Length: 183
Image (cartoon, rainbow, N blue to C red; front, side, top):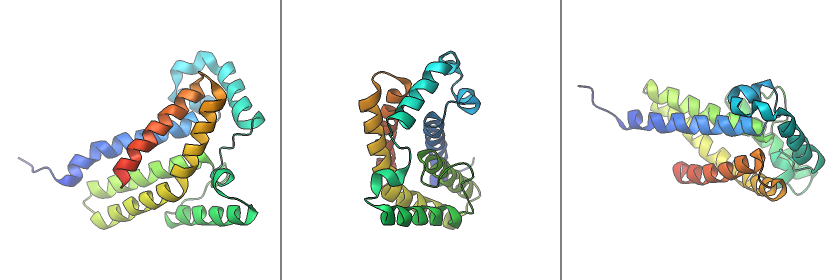
């Protein structure tokens, strides 16, 4: 019989966390074909979701960019963007379709970091897993959590009983659970 290790017992939790980040990333992306692949049950609401997305994130200017919520001036924005890009580059990544500080990019990055940690644990490479876990903690605390909390609260206040209000509520709950896990 194989003895279960601590890493083995952590793998299902890592998979659930990865899925949580992926789901939130897609939920806050533009409702295009990829969105409806992930949320097929919403395909009949395509027009209303697109209109709500445009209203919230384009007309009302609830920016889905982290620096818009964390930085007080252009100099701070530039510093935040440089720091965020430093994280991405350290793991060999480069955003290709959006700004580095977009909420969807940051959620995808956390998904990637968890994937890398999970893979390292599967192959019993504790050093690489620790690097990924350390990056998750720092990135979460410094960039993701503060901004996503502000963004989610603004979405809830501006969207009534829409998909985006529910997604923002789920986001706040997920961030609370992540905060406990990441400590």
